[in-house]
Length: 106
Image (cartoon, rainbow, N blue to C red):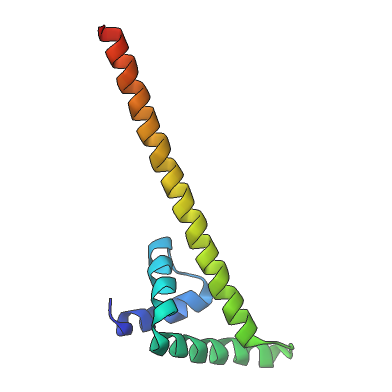
């Protein structure tokens, strides 16, 4: 994906609507692409800032954006861990079944 594709994902990231695969690609791209990170910051400040001003709430949007990105990265790591654990269990189950089958044949 190029930067234009990632920029189109920004509103969905801000609203929390990205699926796991898009979230994983998005957070990985944001880590190294300064232009997309800047665009995310601008859109986040505008979107969240306007909502907070209308509500009259006090806020630190830079901190909230950092927290949201860190939480997204943590969710990606947890999801990846579960995927790896599932793969390990599948391989272990296949090995166990193969061992049982061989034992029965012997």
